[in-house]
Length: 618
Image 1 (cartoon, rainbow, N blue to C red):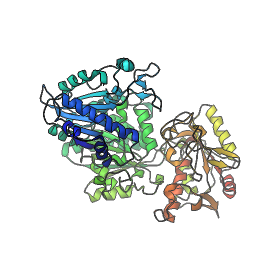
Image 2 (cartoon, helix red, strand yellow):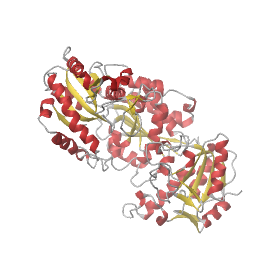
Image 3 (cartoon, one colour):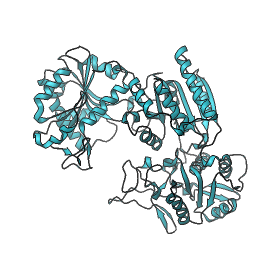
Image 4 (cartoon, helix red, strand yellow):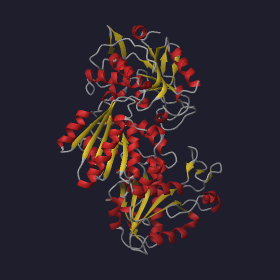
């Protein structure tokens, strides 16, 4: 959780180059030259100030990683409180800025002269966020409200006028600002929070703390994730929620453990169940987190459920963030989109100490007394994804855990048309029944466009009428980075029609939203989405371009590997032909079941297009 643990006295005996070398040794990703320079210049300054304050023996945790996140605080100082003798921690955000001013009058945003990238977060707001996160998630701090303090230190800012704007931000115990002109005040403040003497025990407590959401955070989440109209539960949705509630209370009374698996097709309400559980359990003060394997889905949930309180966003995690979780520290772990569980959580960024053969499903089951898996087995679209009812049940029973299963038969997408979902499954060869012609259903509209231009026109007409609409396609075209001027490359080309894919990154470019928000934010209609940005979402009208990797031959669909451009599908060794065939069919099943009101189809293959016209009468 920290790249380097040391003391001010030891740090002052190191050269800048050796400090950088020690920190780089613990990094798995590349570190920019600017960040390395910052280490070499800022850390010795802070160490000297601590030594002058008589605090040369406190512990310094450098580049401390906040639990369950990739965020890192520059320094956490660990010691004892000079007045109470209790553990005391000071989170420090170091900035090399010599000047900064308010950005367009904002208290929370600042503009740093000469620094590219637009406005920055006020450094005090930044460190306050770190402190709030630690208070929310570290059990060792749960009953020690005065254990944390935070400060931002602009040690190069020696002219008070150059940072005067920053003083508008409110002062708090976890958020104070010091500059190079305030060095005396900084020393005095540190002496009020840390006593002379070793900080080893305090550092051990922090680094060894159990990680779980606090009761304070749960109260905030209960206020935020409250009952809304879309959370009204019916049928087996309510059954699933009641079963989980019961399992939670049973596990608390009898010190037992049980897994719940909730299965259902697209639009059956799995995520409604998940968010209802999150709100309900939070209101009851139970320790609960939500996790998915989808970046787009998690980012959107963070935005929607935590839009008024950033602390709530921290309750939405990813499957691979539980490698070091304490066993049964949570009452409930809600695992949405569990079909995206992978063999292991290890990837190229995983630290060597954590590289084991431990199964990801084992990590997730171990993390909570009641792990809840919500999944659709026909939405496995990537090599390595392995979440299924059979696999989860088999493993849970192998480790001695009872499993309860609820199937959500209801349909709340595709106009509530069960027939459309069955038609799609038959069409794609995902059932034993042969494909059949679409019988018009008043609940859901299906049409075939004569070209991509018509597909876009039909969807835009619905968009202009106030409906939501998106275009998506199979991964059959290259995917370019934006050009230097910020314009997107129109990679998806069909004849004379061309549109760009959705963005790859996390920042809006022009009218195009970040990739994770393509399905929900304004501007997404002008790009073509792929399965990784569409999965988990819904919109009124869905336009789907069937690429040349799925074509109609001899009365059924067949897959063409050479036409697929997905890098994850490239290796024939890692993804043998039967698996490739199944995954491509799953991809199109996901794309074809995003619509709430209707779907518009078009194929780039002439024979397939003719078959679609026969299957879907005008």
